Amino acid sequence: MKKNIAVLVSGKGSNAKNICAFFQKSEIASVKLICSNKKNRPLKSFSNEIGVNYYFLDKRNVDFFDEFINYTKALNIDFVVLAGFLLKVPKKLVELYAGKIINIHPSLLPKYGGKGMYGMNIHNLVIKNKEKYSGITIHFVNEEYDSGAIIFQHKYELKKNETTESLAKEIQKIEHSFFPKIILETIKKPL
Ligand code: GRF
Image: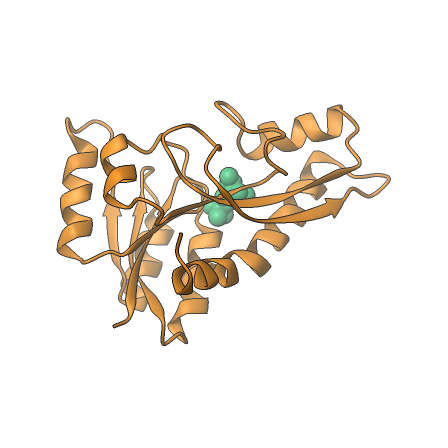
């Protein structure tokens, strides 16, 4: 039986789109749901066009995560992928999908991980601290920020004149090239 993936985002969703494209050709799994906690019309239209369910996780609703959890159950979601998702994942979801929630982080964890460490905040610090390397980490999610078991890391050597913006672009390219493949490998061989 094909596995069903839910992709959760807080940003533009370029990783989510890239993951959808990759799994459209897969026999192993497919993206069944895209969920955003920010209003994201382009991503909603994209989901509609490719026939993937779209869910707006509205923080203003009491029990907003409970409703989402019921929805994932109704859709028979097997794996949850966090692709630039900034809300803390509640215990209930972590327990329900134990070893089946995968996150991508734009640094070489444990460096630049934890609360407040996301997106440009990370790249700014990496440049400010004159780091020689940065990269990506793909890891399982537990109840603490960025501290679940590491599945995969890819190192990037900063260019001499690297800026926050150029670094962000390079890191995103790396995310796009590795994330779908690592998700597939993890689905084939879960924890
Ligand atoms: C990614 O770089 C992710 O690692 C970071 O936020 C970015 C999300 O980009 N935490 P997008 O929404 O996939 O375009």
